[in-house]
Amino acid sequence: MTEKSSNISQTLKPVFLIGFMGSGKTTLCNALAARTKLKSIDLDDYIENVAGMSIKEYFSLYGEDSFRHLESESLKKAAAEGFNLIACGGGTPCFNNNMELMNRLGKTVYLHVPNERLFSRLVIARDKRPLIAKLDDDSLRRFIADKIAEREVFYRKALHIFDASQLEDEDQIERTSALFIEKYL
Ligand code: S3P
Image 1 (cartoon, rainbow, N blue to C red):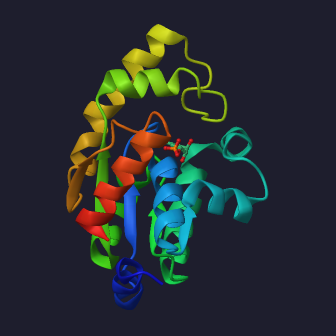
Image 2: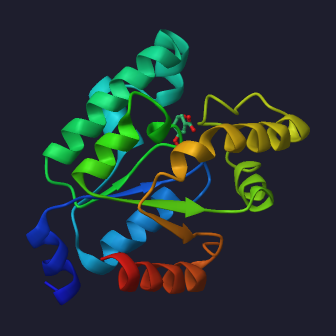
């Protein structure tokens, strides 16, 4: 176990990665877990396991309100199960006082990425995301601008804000995760 991982494992306080869809929460979480051996979970995967179906299917069967309830319950459970790194969904901080819960339980880090970069990542990754799956390019651009404006008030309650715009290839992921580990783990 590295010195870095023993530090955080001892405190047992989870680090919550938050930010908009496409901000790199999953990518960074996987890279951090591989480098530190910390116990990590992607909340969307956790929810899909509990629900026994994809998030897209869950949305279309039960709707967003029910999803947000399941998301909050899953967040609490994941934190209680001792995960050190938790990659949240893009909407997690914005419902049911989840942001307050995360700030109480651990360390929140907002992965900030400029809108245009979010667009270039999401334009090729719409399919599995129910909120944007049916949007054309122009609507996606507008959706990003509008939702970010609405959600930033929640995201900015994070303890830290981290520039996650450089995650486009393995070199960038390496540099960005090294910086993240230095700062927060
Ligand atoms: C959502 C983001 C998704 C997923 C769900 C809703 C949102 O997670 O939780 O589709 O409201 O922004 P990612 O941010 O991992 O795509």
